[in-house]
Image 1 (cartoon, rainbow, N blue to C red):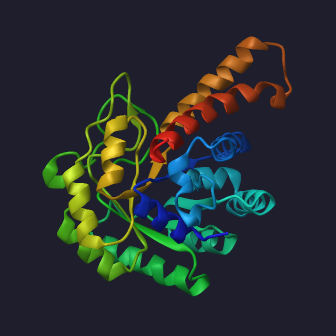
Image 2 (image 1 turned 180 degrees about the vertical axis):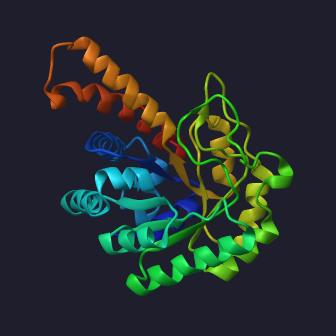
Length: 305
C-alpha cells in the first residue's frame, strides 16, 4: 500500500485530485468508503487507474475538524479508518482538518492520522509561519511519514449554509494568497502541502453558487511553491472551476457542507418514511444513500470519470 504523499503526487502527475470528505459519525464514513469502493470496482474511473500509486483504486481522504474529532474521538476514528485500509487493502487515509492547537496536532499524530493541518490562517503572516513551523517540528519528531499542511489566507471557518460572506474571508484579489508570500511560507515552515485562499470559501451560499476561483492565481502559486496544493471549501463551487483548478495545480479537494446537507435531507427522509421507527440502523440508510450520491458525483469529477 502506497503512502498518502505518493498518492497525492500521482494525482498531481495525472492531473486528477484526491477527494477529501469530513465526517463526525459512522454514517458518513460508511457513505464515503462505499462510494470510493464502488468507483474502484466498476471501472468507472479510468483516470484514477493510470497511476501506479493508485493500485487500480480510487483513493479517498477522511477528514475530522477539531469539533468533529472531539465528537467522534481522534483515536477512535483513526482505528476505524486503519481497519478499513487494512481489511480491504484500500487507499483510505485520515486527516486532522483545521487543527488550531499544538496539543491537538500532537494527539492526532500519536493517534495515527496520516496528515495534519496546522491552521494559522487567522494569524498574521509571521505568526502563522511560527505556529505552523512548531507543528511541523512536532510532527516530524513523532512520525516523519505524517504529512503537515499549512494554510495561508482566511476563507471562513464553518461548513454551513451561508446567507452572507463570512467576516474577514479573503475574496477581493488584494486579500487572496500571493505567490511570493506562499513561497516564503513554504520555505520557512517546511510544510508538505499548502492550502491557499484563491476565491474559495468554507460553507455554501443559500440558493447560489460560490464565487469563482482564481485559476491564474492557483497556477502562479503552484509554480512558486512546488509542493501539492489543497483546495478547501469546495462545496458550492462550479464543476468547471474544479476542472480548471485541478489542471492549474490543485491535487486535493475538500468537501464538507454538501454532504452535511445530504445527511440532513437523508435523515429527514428516513424519519418521514418510518415515523414510528426507533431503530437507528433502519433509519440511517437514507442518510448513507444521500451522502454517497454526493461523494460519487464529486469523486467522478475529481478523477476525470
